[in-house]
Amino acid sequence: MEMVERQDLDMVILFYNPVMMDPKEPDIMSIVKRCDQYNIPVATNIATAELLILGLARGDLDWRLNLK
Image (cartoon, rainbow, N blue to C red; front, side, top):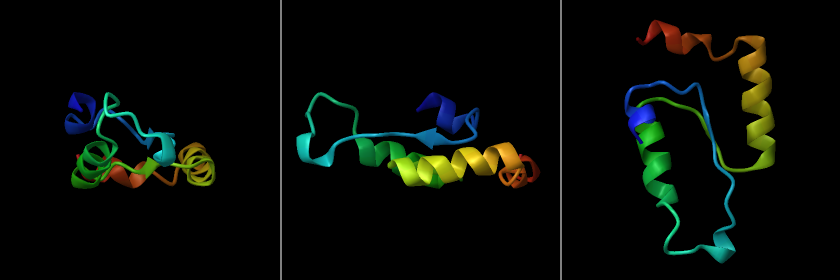
């Protein structure tokens, strides 16, 4: 969470199985909410992860530099 708050991340890729959630795992929704709060793109599935990685490589996420 600290890296999210410091905006040290370009994106978060978080794969989980919602059917087999373990109460000991980190709270997924709190991570997603924190990323939304700090404008950090989040992928929770392979399709979105691929789009974010390709966008990062292409420079589509450079707009975040203007927010800092």
